[in-house]
Each structure stands twice: as structure tokens, then as C-alpha cells.
Length: 230
Ligand SMILES: *Cc1c(COP(=O)(O)O)cnc(C)c1O
Image 1: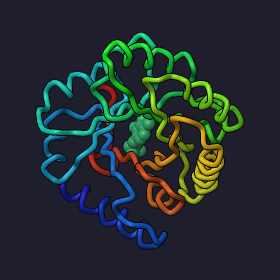
Image 2 (image 1 turned 60 degrees about the vertical axis):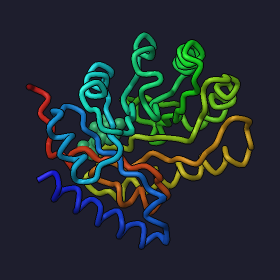
Image 3 (image 1 turned 135 degrees about the horizontal axis):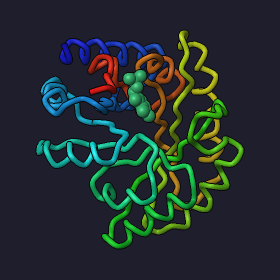
Image 4 (image 1 turned 120 degrees about the vertical axis):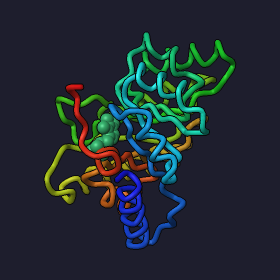
């Protein structure tokens, strides 16, 4: 099942890239494995998965310890400052940084280990009350502040688009995030690159790719529906 799903997602990614005149290599598929047991991740690895996204620190750490194959791990969920110490040095990228205080904690823990941590800034591009993320108009200021941390590197922006029935409804937000990233790139802030755009989930990743996503986060489309009651 997972293998078939991945084949389908892969075909959709290729189609979207073709439609947008982009190369397949420009887009990283992050398989969002939250709530899913390790054997299913191993199945995805067998089917060609390279990158896994998790949103809970404990679950992420357990899976990192259990799975010995080389995997790029992504922290995509809201991160509390007191849990930063558990993931720094273990994940390729933290997608969900939306405050100076959180970035400062990542700086502190990275400095202790003498490493540099890569992060994305989460932007609440649709300005939803229920979502984490910095407001678009406050993003540049936050990036300027974080850019002063020597052990943190900002690689780009991330957003969680609204839950919609028609993915076309989210095109405006993906476009807005891309525009914001181009705008900030143009400011040439030291230590900041705007090469990554993490946007698009199961319902809308093809639209996100058309609008410039470099990372799509697909959970249900690969692993099936999640059951939070187990
Ligand atoms: C759960 C989750 C996803 C994947 O959602 P699906 O709709 O299952 O593809 C992507 N990004 C984040 C931040 C998530 O928490």
C-alpha cells in the first residue's frame, strides 16, 4: 500500500514539476510519518523515501534511535523551547521556528555542541488565528534578528496552508510565501539563504510545487489516514 502510494505521489510530483517547467530534483518529498509505527517507515524507506517529517519530539527521538538506516529527519511541528535540546544535532532541518526566543534556544544548544543548525521560519501566511507562525509583515524583522546567531542558519520559509476542499484556494498563499521569500532574498541578509520553501501537504502539494515549493510534506497521501486514538 505504502509503495503504491509513493509511486502515485512521485508521479504527481513529476507532473507538477513538468507543468511548472521545473526539474524533479528541485523538490524534496518529505514523508510525514507522525503517529505511524516504525515498520511503516521501513516500508517507505524500501520504496525510496529519503526524508521523514515528525511533529512530536519524543516520537521523533524514538524513531531516530530505532531506525539505523540513513534518513534525513525533519522537525515540522510546533517546538517548545525546553525540548530543543533533544533534537539539536539529530535533525537535518527544523521547519517550525517562529520566535526569537525559540531561535535563541536553538542557538544555545547548537553552540554547546559546536554545530550549526539549519532552520526555516514558519510564516502564518493566511493569518489564521489557530495557527503558529510569524505574520508575513513581521518576518523580515525576525529573520534579521535571528541572522545574528552564529550557530543558526536560516534556509528559507515554511507555511501550513489552510485546510481547504479545493487546493486552488491555497494557491494565493503559496504564491504569497514565494513572493515574501524573493523579497527577503533581495535584502541580502548575512547568514540567510532563501533557497527552501516548505509548503504543500497531501491535499495541495501539486499546487504548491507549481508555485515554487522546494519541499512538500506528504503524510496521508503516503501512509493513509492517521488514527490519533491509539
Ligand atoms: C501532519 C502534517 C503534514 C502532513 O499532512 P497530510 O495532510 O497528512 O499530508 C504536513 N505538515 C505538517 C506541519 C503536519 O503537521
